[in-house]
Image 1 (tube, rainbow, N blue to C red):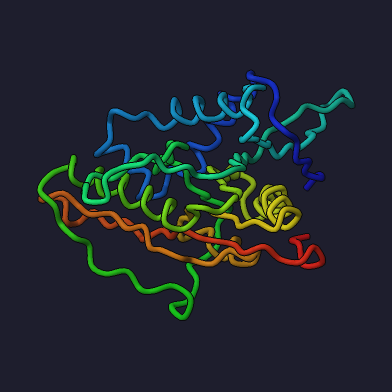
Image 2: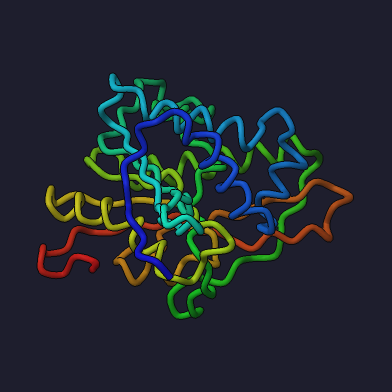
Length: 258
């Protein structure tokens, strides 16, 4: 395979291509099918486009997005660029608005974390049970609204409770084209985040699906909270493997991912 280049995304014309790639990368993930079925108000591709366009805004200094690029040779001797992976990072702090400590309502976090923001990665297997707590049987709730509310609450609470008060890098999404998975592209795409974290001595955070967890553990991320789905009544046969919120503590520069 030709050498893969990691390039910052600056051209809005790349955004639809990247959004479609992200969709293809997670097409077989039961979690995405769960979100499609029960959260029909949110379109995955439209939401991804919106988030990536936000990252391209020059006024937004807290976010950055990258594409993994292959230069594909043409018959006439020239090359054309093929985007084969996407990474999108937030770099900053979480500021929680003041609220009554007796309130039970879950507070939105200012960075608008979304359950579709997953570090899907590029394949692999779930870590051993010595690293990750085995998921409990699925909990059944009354309807789709309760199921989706649980997902948003759980993702938001995991993020806030883990990084509140800490400057951090947060991998909003990292996905590799299905045609190019298991080729080391995911490892290249996460280098910016882990290097930035080590340079500034700050933590890294992401939401990982099971297939990519070995990749992130190799980069120093460790699971800190399970991210499970509850299932509406009547759909008990719908099984969604548990994902995990993952945290990475900074390493000495000599130990950065290569």
